[in-house]
Length: 123
Image 1 (tube, one colour):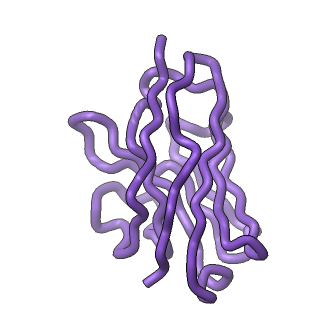
Image 2 (cartoon, rainbow, N blue to C red):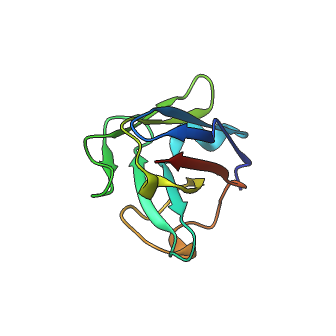
């Protein structure tokens, strides 16, 4: 297991930006893919983004393409989610996941989750 700690959430107005960070413990971080998911109120956990172990391959969920970017710094054991042009529909708890199933929805997409960070977008 990798210990994951998210940060960077908060309250932002529509059209604004936030950058989430996920700090990971353990030496396996640099050898595994990482992902971001989110759970909105009354909604299933949704795939947001994923990145390969070396950063060469990324994937974004359809609702965030063109607005969000995922990146990682293996020297810092950290994965990032840059969120631009935020909309009220982006309001959710955002979770970092280790070695996730890309494009998956639901709690079974990973066996290794962070505690989540709240993002609230006001209109």
